[in-house]
Length: 444
Image (cartoon, rainbow, N blue to C red; front, side, top):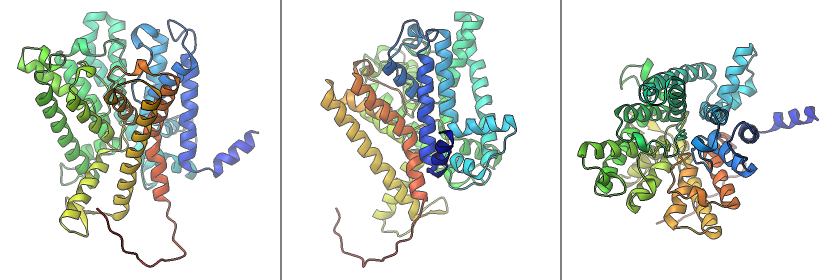
């Protein structure tokens, strides 16, 4: 039996094996959360699967109150699942293989390449080593900084646990919190407003970008990918923070509840960068204006960077799409940025990613609207949050029925695994045996 399973896995495509691996991890996580020591009261298998899927896909949507519904062991299981999901299944496997002294074969490198969204085999194991160092350094420093907030309030051990949990959750862009109200009670705390965004912004940039920025000379030594990521991320941060402040300034349910302009700007800063797949909230998301919610939906679908802990269609996808559109209106036949050209294959991949994202979000919203009662904005916001692996919600998650939970789980899973599968098919070239004459087509 096991021999047949190994043979089938050997002949399966890398994305299929990776997807199966993540699915197995979700099931194991659900079984762990079903243990009596994990929760304060028994939970259904559906809720356990939903929470496990949300953790593995580093989303943060939850039907269980992490503070009151989970014990310490349940919270520990949850954050371990978040770490595995953010680190990446194959990155973790390489870490285990290295610790045991096991060689990494060509097929394992293929899986690793797909898991890290890379197009070549060069220096893959070195990249994993960089990833491990970056993760440990960032999460330890983040926990130490947050300890100055939580230890004085909760004592040494509980304070350190809250600090470590939020540091791991933030760097992996998960959005889970050990507090029922999230980080609302710390909306004006300067350390929280600096450390938590720094962690999820760094995690969302991607390991390749962080390594490039550390090893190479500023700007001129950076690769095209790093330049596009930095410029695109800065632009999205400015847009997110600026429009949040502009649209929510006088909203009594969000920024307007504070009299101080500095406090309002602080909230606008934190909440404006959060939709980039982080999922934390220092204000009432359900109280946002419709225009702000629509803005956040766009930011959630865009997400962070490739080879990062973030989800979405990725910042580089958005940048290439904008560059291709600009080249079209300027009637240029070549797409370029910062002195480097961008191949047509990358443009086709971007088109496919955007199209698939649009179709998945439409189908998910349609099924939820057809089977559940709810406001259109609440439903579409929930779907966008699940697909972008963000975790923000307009308090709609508790309203989900069994079918709704399945829909959101599928959206979370596809949002995490989908780009890997698409990348594999786009990287697999096949030469046509027959060439057809070009036809005339009218567009627009």
